[in-house]
Amino acid sequence: MKYGAVGDGIADDTSAFQKAWENACKGSSKTGSVHVPAGKVFLLNSLHFSGPCIPKPLLFTIDGEMIAQSDPNKWENGENGVIPWLIFDQVDGLAIVGRGLLNGQGKAWWDIHCRDHPGPNCIWLAPTMMTFSNCGNVTLKSLRFRDSAQTHVLVMGSQNVYISDIKITSPEASPNTDGIHITSSTAVSINHSDIAAGDDCVSIGDQVNNVTVSFVNCGPGHGVSIGSLGRGGTEVAVENIRVWHVNFTGTTNGARIKTWPGGTGYVRGIEFFDIRFSSVQNPIIIDQFYGCAPNCPQTRKAVHIEKVRYMKMSGTSATKVAMKLDCSGESVPCSNLFMRDIDLSPADGIDSVSTLCSFVQGSAQGIIRPSPCL
Image 1 (tube, rainbow, N blue to C red):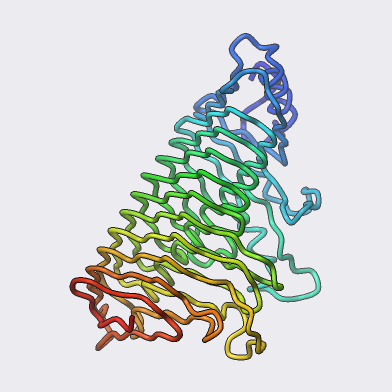
Image 2 (spheres, rainbow, N blue to C red):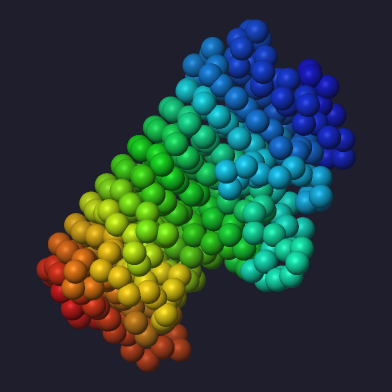
């Protein structure tokens, strides 16, 4: 408010936020912090919060409501495949906290998205709500996110990012509204959060290692997905991903790994532990023919999936195939998979569940239902 923000939800407060950030980042304000007060609604267009900053950590407290400009015609084009709403770039040491709400007002974008509204003027790219680009030592805590035009939280080129106690909500039918997407990053944790979205609750892209997703409620949405990876023949490097204590409710997938044929590299060191499914389609799925089945190109190249552990997983499947492990082929099978204590039963309306496997090597312990094909 000190920098001229009105906070009535009608006036554009973008420049006030930009000035407040620049003063806090340069250390010219005494506190080295930005505070968005409760009881106000701030209408904002694209904001670029650039570092490096002098205060470490810089505290960004959001107690009020921030709403995105809802008219797609008032946004500039994106770059590098992202239209950012709030982007933090090259900031090392950042704490974003508070009980506030970020509202992406995405419906006008969904209504012109090519998936559901094909035509000459449809769009594939829409604003991402909050982006961390080339950042380090970031804490994001306690905020609520609603109705992003596209991905809600994007972590790219960053390390040591800690996300906890957040709530993300967007309609099940909203296109590409992933909860949290991670790419080219290391040491990211997401815990004690609720995510309901139109796409993956959490998606893990390429060049990612050391990620923990724990104590998360996911649904509706497309599950927790590693991938898709290897599109266009790219070389993949994803490892050390832990998905623990996650509840999936009514999602289209649960524990998912998805790759395109023709990619190379590896996905390894993956662990799904203490997972509960409630009426979930494809509770356990590896799909190495993503995006092209049934007309996939013939190729001996594939991303190698290995050292994947599935342990203490139970609940109901909304599809007959509760476990689908569809691996690339003889030249690059999935290897060293391990299952222990898995109990999947049919959801209402499904008479029985089964397992489908191709080119999988591994072992199992304890009770596995339906019976494994390892």
